[in-house]
Length: 353
Ligand code: PMP
Image: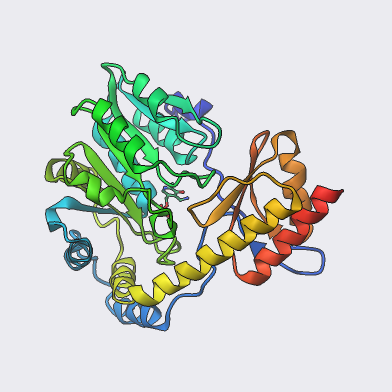
């Protein structure tokens, strides 16, 4: 048998959210924080036009998309680095900083990919437990050692939906040495309505060691096409660009992302509707008796402890797929009103059972 890296023996595989179907054929996938909306016709048309050129390699530098992102956020194009989904950009970040002995700090529980990417890149994970359901930034700063090279702050946090606020983030960043890269993972930024949460893009302008990670997968509804990006000072962005696998962001994905930026107003109306549903779902859960942290993302978090898998199972019988984290809790994405109502009925039945 061929020999593999030892780390593969102990690394868990990434568990993607799956769909389930009820006995009477209903299926509501609330397990991957996707947009519940089908793509806009203008985006489908852009992809169809791009498809006529798919015998050609894509623009390796994604010049037009990079320019469109730079223009959208008022940043220089050199500050933008693209990847096939922001998880790939996160992987590139790990590749950029990792060497044996290098430590990367992140909160736990947070985005499941961080420990996998750390293992793959050969970095040492330093997990700092959440305080309640929120990042414990003071403890994260306390965890910095001379070996620390990168810190992830997932804001809002996946899977709890909680946020860190401007003053605590600034106080934290003041404690981080300039040699340590702080990545603000803002995959769910567009769903934030709490005015006390800083936009990472205002923070990075004054801090050369801060990088902002964003994605087209959630609010822009392109999860299936894989486009994510980083915005950071030029040295960080160019180091990350060096780690990209050539042609990672394909031609159709580039075209779809450009068309999505052009249709942003319409897409953000959809985000507003999801935010309204999120708040409705949370309030209904609280009225049922559940304790649900305020979510600034497109999902809610139920801390169920030992009942987590039973809860997921009981939602599945109604055709509702949620994302269980055994022994901890379940993350439930906000879907369309019918999906949300079906989930709320399942949650209510579980509560009263
Ligand atoms: N960051 C966070 C916090 C996420 O939750 C996700 C997706 N679940 C990602 C990054 C990656 O998303 P994508 O690769 O689709 O851009």
